[in-house]
Length: 64
Ligand SMILES: [Ca+2]
Image 1 (tube, helix red, strand yellow):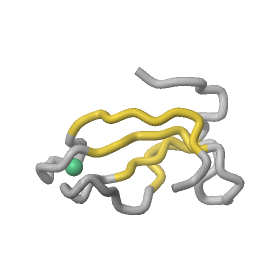
Image 2 (tube, rainbow, N blue to C red):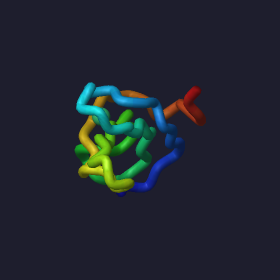
Image 3 (cartoon, rainbow, N blue to C red):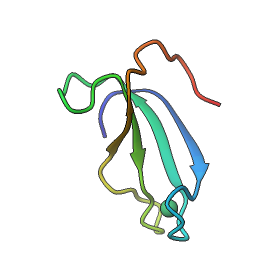
């Protein structure tokens, strides 16, 4: 995973039966920095690679 400012379990966002995570990333990667990133659960306690859910979250210190 990228460097994350905040991470939280939010339930099954994509309705595939497995819990997912949302996190605010402060990664220096051009495609992930200061983004809200979704990690979809695989159902075995691990998660797929994050994908950007929303941009412009640099001022967020925490979620939920
Ligand atoms: Ca899911």
